[in-house]
Image 1 (cartoon, rainbow, N blue to C red):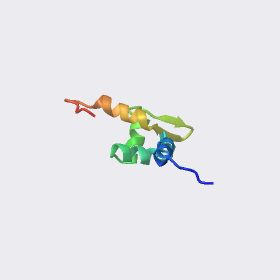
Image 2 (cartoon, rainbow, N blue to C red; image 1 turned 90 degrees about the vertical axis):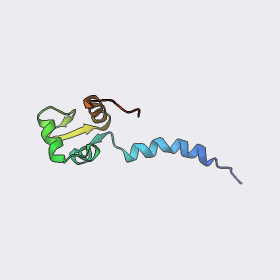
Image 3 (cartoon, helix red, strand yellow; image 1 turned 90 degrees about the horizontal axis):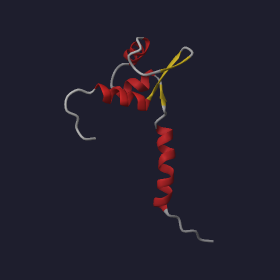
Length: 83
């Protein structure tokens, strides 16, 4: 039995699943710092001060990737380039 495999259709179906695995929605301070190109200690200090969007899970602090990116966009000054 021979089956024709549509590689492009399969790739389109798998792309969202792979992206979901590569980019977690909740980041720790190291990952959030890497995303914003700042030290993790800065991320934690800003979270303690309530200056960056974060989620507290007991003693753990986590950051939503999309909220951090929106927060950065909102803080951008000057003319914005088309993205």
